[in-house]
Amino acid sequence: MLEKGLVQVYTGKGKGKTTASLGLAFRAAGQGLNVFMIQFLKADKIGGEHKAAKILPNISIEQYGAAQFYKKKEEAEKIHREKALEGLKRAREVVMGEEYDMVILDEINVVLDYNLIPLEEILKLIGEKPQKVELVLTGRNAPSEIIEQADLASEITMVKHPFSQGIKARKGIEY
Ligand code: ATP
Ligand code: MG
Image (cartoon, rainbow, N blue to C red; front, side):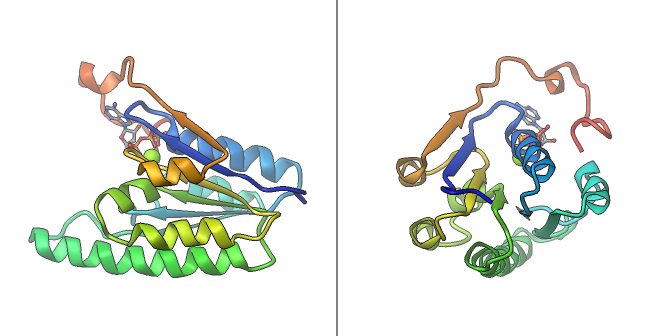
């Protein structure tokens, strides 16, 4: 168990934010910590992390996003907002509960940037989290208020990405 859990932020335009948080989860799990990851804005569970988490007893992942194929923008936004609020409720439960040592809120910075949930709610969660919980927040465009509250913030710069060569997301690497 951690004596003092910190708040970590991974942001920026380069690849590696979700990857970094999964690396943390893997390392933490190896040391016997219990990890809970909430993925905002994602809904398909196609990622390799979901399969790996089934094998590792102390990593759990849940998704709170809308599926890709809504016809109308307003409809998609409404569902994203509802799901994000559900995810926030779940995040509160797992952070405040006794069970988890590390809680990862994947893409939460994007959720805040899109105003799907109020920034105050996450600032409140940071302020109220139990001492032992390590809280990890990922996603582009982290609000400055979040960075101010964090103990660690890394901004990943996009120097090169294979997408610009037309290389699409690869199974086992990007998902
Ligand atoms: P990853 O999940 O690979 O660590 P990430 O969390 O840093 O990426 P996101 O902003 O969440 O980045 O990106 C979502 C998807 O877009 C991922 O499949 C990611 O690999 C890909 N991606 C990340 N950065 C770029 C970029 N600069 N150009 C194109 N695609 C990108
Ligand atoms: Mg990501």
